Length: 391
Image (cartoon, helix red, strand yellow):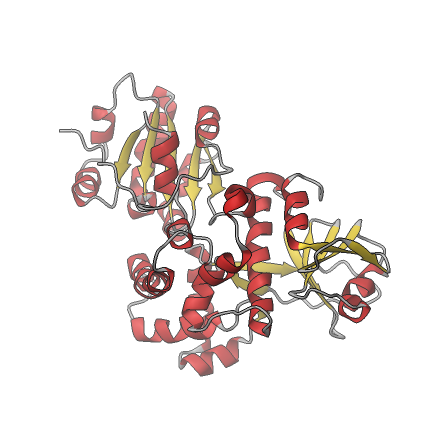
C-alpha cells in the first residue's frame, strides 16, 4: 500500500501567487531542506510546482507510524520513476535522515525536506547529510511576489501569511494562529509543558518586538525565571517565529552597543499577540512598518543576496534600523514629511565614512535628498531593493 499523502490545500481560498523560490530548480541541482513557519505556503508551493514528486506527509498519522516503525519501507516503495521525493514536516521524524542519506548515495535521488523547526533537526542529526543538502527558507509573501495585489495597510493589519492576507476573517485567523498554533508548536517541540507560563511570556515578548530585550524585566512581567526566558527566546528562534538582528559594531568615532534586537517574523502575528491594531498616524504604525520592512529585508537576504542584516546603535543614543552587509544603512519613518532632525542618526553614521549609501524609507510621495541622505517612498525603495540596486 502506497503511503503518498493525499493532496491538501492549507491556503484554500487564496489565489496562486508566484513565489520567488523556484523549487524545481533547487532540487534539480541538490537535495534541500525547506524551512519556514507554518502557513508560509510550503505545502501549497510543492503541490503547484513539484506535482510529479513522491510526497510523504509526516503529519499523516499512518505515514508517520509506518516510517517510524520501518524507515526502509520508503526505499521499498520508491520506483525508478521517482527522482524527486518530498518529506513534509521532517522534524517529526529526524531518524529518517539516515535512510535519506543512504538513498541519496545509492540511488542518486533528490529530496526536498520541509519543516517548521530547526530545533529537532539539529538534535536529530541533520549533520548526517553533511553537505548533501542545502537549506533554504520560505517567508510570508513579499512586495515583489504580490505585485499589484500588495497593499501596505492590508499588510500591516493582517501580516503576510498567504491564508491570512487573503482571508475573509483575518482577525479570527490571526487569533487562532497566534494562540493555538504557536502553543501547539511549542508542545510538539517538547520544549516546555508549562503552557500558561509560555503564554504569558509570549504576550510579553510580543511587546518587545523590534527592541533590545531586557530579559530581567521580561522574566518579571511573565512571572517566570530569567533562565526560562532565555530558553523561551531560543525556542522562538528555533521554530522560526523570531529573528535575532545582530548589532553592527564597526564604528570608531561613536562606540556601538553590542546587544541584539528581536523581531517576530510577521507583523500580523505581532498584532494578534499584542492584542492591538496599528492604525496609520500612530507610533504603533511606525513599529509595524519597521517590522514589515524587516520581513522584506530578511526575505531578500535569504532569497537573493545572502548578505547579513544588522542594525546600529551608539552608546549615546543614535540608532539606525537596518544595515545591509557593509554598504547600505536604512532608517524607517512612517511619515509623509521627513525633516533634517529625523535623519540625524543616519548623518551621525555617515560621519564614519564606512558605508556606500544612507537611506530613509518613508511615506513621502517622491524621492529627494537631505544632506546626503536619500529619502525614498516605500514602494520605490522596495522596487529598487528587489531589482538588486542595493548590492
